[in-house]
Structures are given as structure tokens and as C-alpha cells.
Length: 94
Image 1 (cartoon, one colour):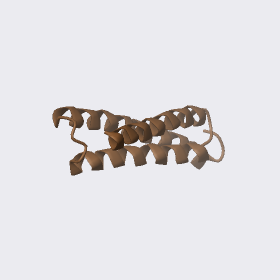
Image 2 (cartoon, one colour):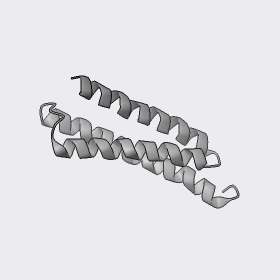
Image 3 (cartoon, one colour):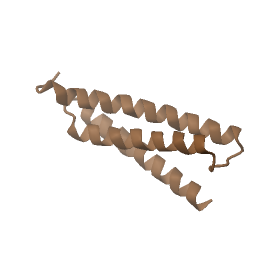
Image 4 (cartoon, helix red, strand yellow):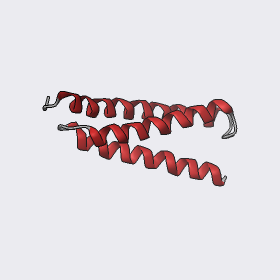
């Protein structure tokens, strides 16, 4: 761990949030496939919002993180946040 240790914990927390966001991405894709692709279901909207907010929180946590995981977490959080935004825009257009 790099001093101060709490900043290293932010990077670890960002990786954990990215794992949660990835699981929610898979769950929302499975939900959309099982329900026929109807995005107006309240459960689907909650899964979608939780996934997006987990990615955004991971992005914020990785900005405050420090250590070897920081840049990996920042890159992963940026990609996951962009995926959630792009998928949300796609659903809004359809």
C-alpha cells in the first residue's frame, strides 16, 4: 500500500464498483433479452440506473485513488461509464 493508505483503498473500491457495474450490465442485458427488449419495465430501469451510478462512482473513486490500480480503475471506469451512457442513448432513441 502506498501512503496514505486510504487513497489506495479508493482504487480498490473503484475496481469493486467496476465489477458490480459489469455484473449489472450482464443482468440488464439478460433482463432485456428475457423481456423482449422492453426498456420501460421499472425493474430494468432500476438495474440500469444502479449500473450507471456504480460506474460513475467508480470513476470518481479512481480519481481520488492512488497506487498501481488507480490508472487501471480509471480506464475501466471510463469505458464502463461510456458504455452505460451509449446504451442509455440507444434505448432513448429506440
